[in-house]
Length: 152
Image: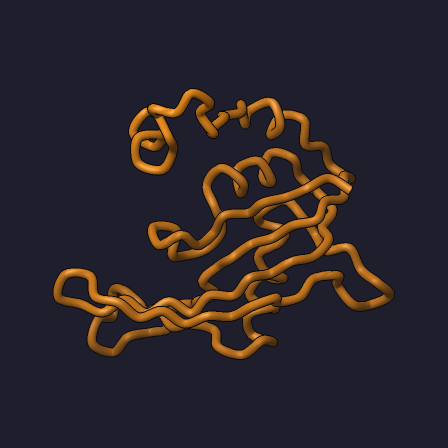
């Protein structure tokens, strides 16, 4: 913790501007049936067969809004939630989409991110807690996958 304060805080200030909170208490309080607002910036991608490497597929991004929304919808049960619906329409949308390209060693990393926001209902508290601790999807090393929620 001290290295974070040293890098981003004001450790020599008379009034330090940092505070930490226990996360476990919140995670243990999540119950099935709860409704929450959520935000997730993710790297919606999938693997396709790679003829050059039959043992491992090639990761490619979902690029259309419909593909990206379907990507999250298909994964929701695995992560312990479902989308609250307004009639037949799930109450979530994509608020922003960005493309990043940068060097990592000798290769180029490409991330196509989508920031999702909306309303979910918890279906499995253990899976939901795991999703919040471990993240969702690929690109976690680059800041993707953090699921944040707020009770409503």
